[in-house]
Image 1 (cartoon, rainbow, N blue to C red):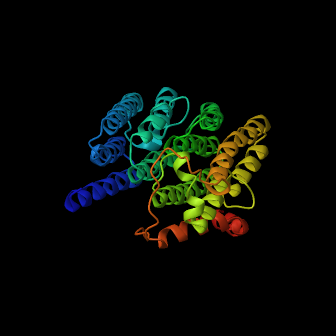
Image 2 (spheres, one colour):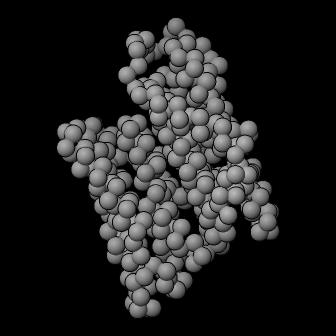
Image 3 (cartoon, rainbow, N blue to C red):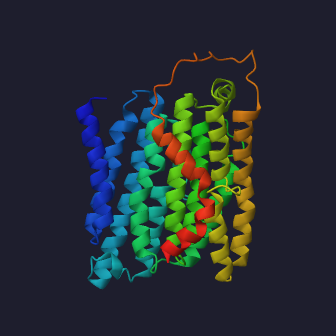
Length: 348
């Protein structure tokens, strides 16, 4: 891609997200979300491959539907209340519609069907942006609306997302689809606690972005998009394979890694709110996600690459990928659990 075009696209992504962060008028928020959506489309379709075109079309239709629903709900609220300010969301119907629209934008179940298919049609770099940066703008709106949202809608969305995110990833062999279902499950953990403790949602979002960034960088370094192709990584780079093992287990929430911290705190907060049944369901559903992370970790580090593999083996050339960012994110993905008291003090 032309460097000038790439700079314009990146600046547009930043502009759309910034408008959503600083805005309090519904039209300004809608405009920021639209800029964010339109900016990533050239990056998605850049491959000129039928699968990329299909993924871009699905993404555009889904996001346009969500934006139209958001605009309709905000207009309805302004018509009833006479206010365009986002904090004056007093109409229950508008609140429900806006929650559904934002759930569609971030890929919460049962509005998740577009995410695995879209992510499968993209390269790893664009998939990374879609899985991390594109979540920021909708969550910025959800954070500001959290006292007004209906917990009776958020809790079923969170439980369903965690169950479907874990169940859907069990039988996958494509790494990008596994990461898509991982995203759905993690979004469920964030949304279920949003009304009661938005600080925990913020903590979970930050850690999710760090761990997902590490995972995508590792797969990009391995140049792998399938489980079969990643099986040879342990012999080529044992250190990176070990980093992949720990990062994947951290995404699954296994102690004593960083990913265990938000799940532990969210379950604790749900129990404090007398929501023991949702907490139990979330804990059991986390085992589904942990299973396919364990399967992926086993394939990455504990299996030998067979000689009869039906694919061309890559040369062991010197890597050209920058390793500083990968080292930093991998360290944060693994080592943050002992800092939990300090993080809780900072949050309060």
